[in-house]
Amino acid sequence: MASSTNQTIRVAGCSVNVMRGGKGPPLLFLHGAGGNPLWLPFMASLSEHHDVIVPDHPGFGRSESPDWLDQLSDLAYFYLDFIDALGLDQVHLVGHSLGGWIAAEVAVRSTRRLRTLTLVSAAGVHVKGVAKGDIFVWSQEERVRNLFADQRYADQRLAQPMTEEQSDIAIKNELATADLAWQPRFYDPQLRKWLHRIDVPTLIVWGDSDKIFPTPYGEAYHHLIKGSRLEVLPACGHLPQVEKADAFADLVRRFAAEHVA
Image (cartoon, rainbow, N blue to C red; front, side):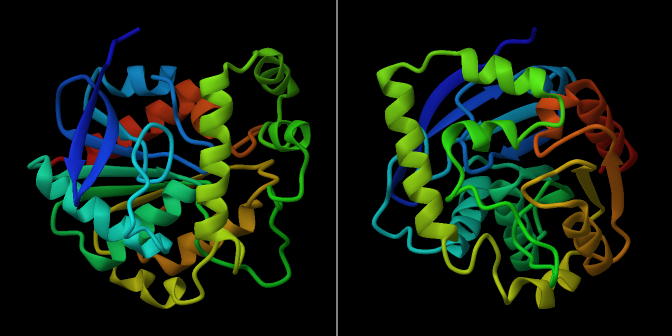
C-alpha cells in the first residue's frame, strides 16, 4: 500500500492536519462528518496516479477549531484559501457526505483552480418527501450499521476498540457537525439555486442502499449540475469509498483521466 506523510500547515490563521501521498495531478479529498483519521486503501490506490491531499477540516480531527468557523460556507471559503496556499492548480476535488456539501459550496463560488468535481453521497440539498437518515438521533451502533449495506463492514468497525484520543476526536467531530448541520439538517436552502454555476466536469457517486441520503439525493444533484454524470454502485451504503473501494477508486481515476488539463 502506498504510504503517506502527515503534516500540520497553517492557513487562514488555523493549524490544519494534512495527510498527503503520491505524485501526479492534485486530488483533494474532503471527508465526511465522521472525519478521516487513517490513510485508507482507496487513497493509496488513487495516490498511484495522483498527489492525494486529505486535510482534517478546521474544527475536526487534529485540526484547530478557529474562531471564524460559524457556518459551513466558512469552510468553502477556507478551502479556496487552502488551495491557493498550497499553490495547487487543476485540482480534482472530491468530497464525501458533509465534505461533498463543502465541495459543492466551493465549486459554486469558484472553479478557477478546479479541474473536476466529484460528489460522493453528498449532503447539501433537500429532496421533498424523501427522508434523510438522522445521525443525531441514532445510537452509536445504529449509526455505524446504517453506514453499510454489507454488515460485515459494520461488524469490523464496531469490534475495533477506541483509544481515549479517538474517543475525544469522535466527540469533537460530532459537536462540529452539529454546529454546522443541525438546522436545517444537512442542507443549505440556498445551494440548489446556485449549482448551475458549476462549470467543471462533475461526477456524482452514490450507493444504492444509502440510508443517510437515499439515491434521490444523488439524482437531485445530477439534475441540478448541468452535464454531470451519476454513477450508482449496487449493494453499497453511504461509504462507497470504503465498501466498494476498488470500484470507487477506479471510477474517480478514470473520470480524472478523461479530463486532463
